[in-house]
Image (cartoon, rainbow, N blue to C red; front, side, top):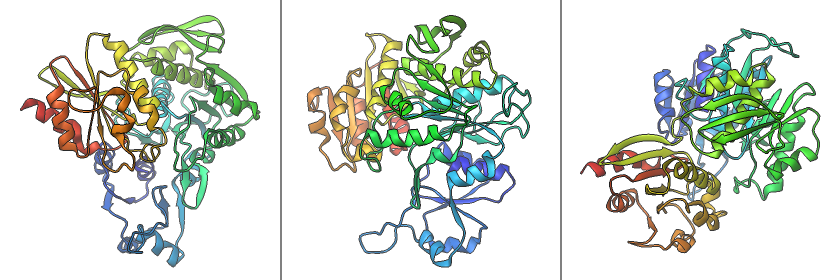
Length: 461
């Protein structure tokens, strides 16, 4: 929603917004754009008299224990019969029309892959617009409109249409529109990065999510391209249900695009022929796959794999994706957005591969997503944290016993895992355990109570 606000402001609209507990980097970006941010959802905001209310999917008709509305502003909008729409629908109607949309979907890696693709197109002189669920360090902002005409048209249908790269989320659109957000985007290039069970609060099982991904595939035109991870059985099932566009695969040895070599330096193969080499600062097999997806998508709009690989050499990743926040007394503290067990494991695996077996990794995490709060994947946590030497779990707000879930690792002082119900206790546990040469990775999809700064401060003391 913050990125949407930035696009609306760039398009010339006057924009205000409200939310609860907004945290960096989005709060900083909105402030820099001069967008007024109101704390809370009070009905008094009706006095702003906007022409349109754009409703995010955090808003609902929920009631508090005392029976009052959780979102009084929404109730007032409905009572007054004022115009409102969802973020994805507003975007589709006011920004994406007439553009070649490149949409990146998947359970993991959407933000990173979308950022890679936008940077590849930017480096190729295409001046793409983009909307990304994070802040790519190469751009320093999460959204922009981009060129209104494509600087270098390609000899393809709509080859002169300006490009827009969007992170395509499968979460539902709004309380009044339960379709996945990405069905609004009508991409001509659709990247299916991976697909696992997630969002247990709105999906019953993996098959329900696969159905939504198939709805996305149904919207890709015949001249479009579906770029799919050849290693994922779930995506194979999605495409088997029906596909009416060109399909390009990546990842597997039999895929159209695959990699040969270490994730930090590898050859890009296209249909068995070496077409480029990527040498960059990112680690992990997951980022190697993200790169292949971005290269294959850029190829669809006329950017060669060699150009794409050259751009990736200068790719700086995204804020909160293994972002080094500081080093104190030889202890490095990182921030990472991981929250799903597979994402935790992937992040830690990538760091372990980079560091080798001698350095210690301390994993500090909070199960904050709706899926994790429900405990739907708590049994996977020991596996997810296996690459770390020590694990520290923030347990506030959980209805399930984290110590019991982590029991296979051993829980308690001097054990491999510890739990804490508040941030200060968690910080004290980490500081007591840390020693020079350690790498502390803080993983959450929220602000995590400012734990990174607190850790660095405590380590100094």
